[in-house]
Image (cartoon, rainbow, N blue to C red; front, side, top):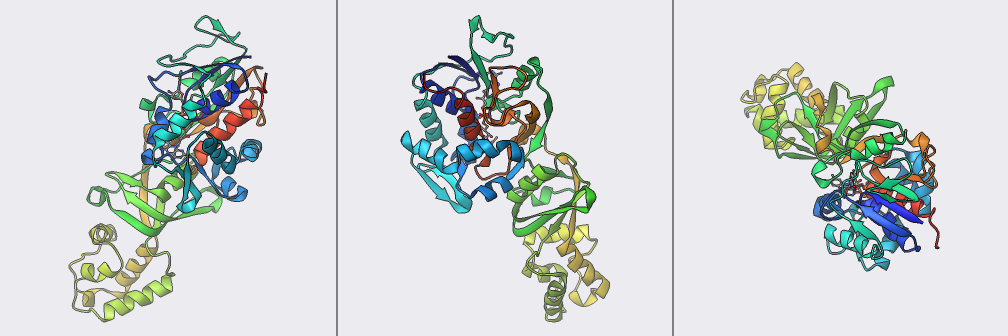
Length: 395
Ligand SMILES: Cc1cc2nc3c(=O)[nH]c(=O)nc-3n(C[C@H](O)[C@H](O)[C@H](O)COP(=O)(O)OP(=O)(O)OC[C@H]3O[C@@H](n4cnc5c(N)ncnc54)[C@H](O)[C@@H]3O)c2cc1C
C-alpha cells in the first residue's frame, strides 16, 4: 500500500516506522526542516516518553478520551513502548512517579531512535500540507491511505500549529473546540512580588458545577501574572471547559483548622511582643507573608499582643482557604497540550480510521484526547500510532 503520513512528530514517526517495516511504501511529510521538533522540548529536553504505572492509574491520568483509548493503550501499553525503544537501542530509566526517560536524559536520542526506525520511509521535510484532494492526492502524488498526525496547536513554532484541523474538516470531520490544557492560570491579584516563588506541599482546589470540588496536592509556582507548576497545570486541565472565578489555596493541608489554630495560639502566646510578620515565618515563606497579609487586610508590623481573636481566626481561615481570583487561562500557545480536536465519535478506536472517509486515519494529539503530565500524552501518541499500524499488516 502507498501510505502518506502528515506530521513527523511523536505519533507520525512511530507510525511511519511500524508501517514501512511491514513492507508498505510510506511517505512522511512535515512542514519543518527536521523531524520531531516538539519532541526536542518535551520533559524539559529530557523527554518523559511514557509512564510505567498500572492500567487503572494510567486511565486516572487521562482527562479526555479515556473510553476511546482503552483499546489502543491495552494493545500497546507503557512496557511495550519501552521494549520497542529498547529494541532500537534506546536505553531508558524509570524515575519518581513511574516517569520513563531515556537513560541519556536527551530527548534528541528519542527522536534519533524513532528516525532510525524510518530507514525505509521517504521523509519529505519543509513540506507543509494545506490541502489533500478527496482521492488522496498530495502534490500530484496519489496515495491509497492518509494518516493525519499533525498534533495540537500549542507551541506553534514546533510546527504543530493547528493546520491539521482544517485538513480534517475538509473531509467532513467535526472539530471539538481546541482549548489550552496543562497551562498556567492567570490571576487577577498582582503577583509580581511572588514571581519565581514555589510553594511545596500545598493544596489547590476549585469548585465545579454541581457542588463538585477538585483538589490537587503538591507543588506550585508563581509566574509574573499567575500560577504554574505541577498542581496548577493539572488543575487547569480539569477546569478549562468551565473556568471558575476563583480557586483556593490551602497553605497547610496537613493540619485541619483546629490543629492549625492551636499551633498559631502557641506561637502567638510565646511571641507576644514580636511583629506578626516575623511570627508567621514559622508557617509561610518570607516572600509570601507580605502578600498574604495584604490580601487579608492585616498589617504585618503589628505586635502579636494587638491581634484580636477575630483577626487570628481570619489568619487561620485564610491559611486554609486563600482565594486566588482567576482572570483566565494562559493562551493556547503556552499550553503543554491541546484539549479538543477531531471528534472521537467519528473515529474507530481500534484502527484510528475515519468513519466518514475510508482510508483516512487520525493519530496523536490532533484527536480530542488529552492527559495529565507524566509521560501520558506521548504514550497516547505512540499507542494510537500502533493502532493505526495494525491496519497495515506485512505485505
Ligand atoms: C513544552 C512541552 C513539553 C512536553 N513534555 C512532554 C513530556 O515530557 N511527556 C509527554 O508525554 N508529553 C509531553 N508533551 C506533549 C507531547 O509533546 C505531545 O502530546 C506529542 O508530541 C503529540 O504528538 P503528535 O505526534 O500528535 O504531535 P507532534 O509531536 O506535535 O507532531 C506534529 C507534527 O506535525 C507537523 N505538522 C503540523 N501540521 C502540519 C501540516 N499541515 N503539514 C505538515 N506537517 C505538519 C508538525 O511540524 C509536527 O512535527 C509536551 C509538550 C510541550 C509543548
